[in-house]
Amino acid sequence: IDLELDKITRRLQEKNCSLSLEDSARAFLLEKSYKPECGAREVRRVVEQSLEDPLAENILGLDLSNRACTVTVSQSPQADELCFAIAAQEQSIPEPPLTDVVEPGPEPLQPVSR
Image (tube, rainbow, N blue to C red; front, top):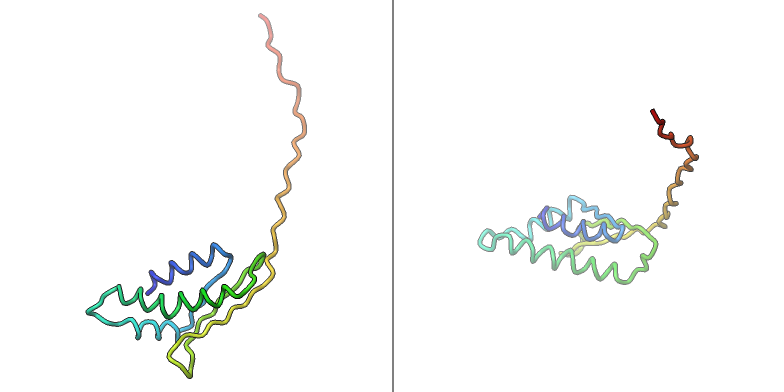
């Protein structure tokens, strides 16, 4: 599961968002994806259907331009699904670094004739 979550985390970081998965959500994904006969394919399918697709639908409805966000994922206590809490905050745009002013140095040395 961690490999699949890392992929999602990296994609979110490209959009200035972070992912926080509560223990209940991790346990939910582990339980739903445990099928030894299917191997890792089942993990990918469950993560995609239970986490990635609903998360994308939730994010698409938000205006996250010039904002960073934190997505917290937990298991819904009433249903067999995950819940998403998305907190967006204004992103401070860093000011460009000041460039050092270089003072002119001493005159270049002139060759001495011998």
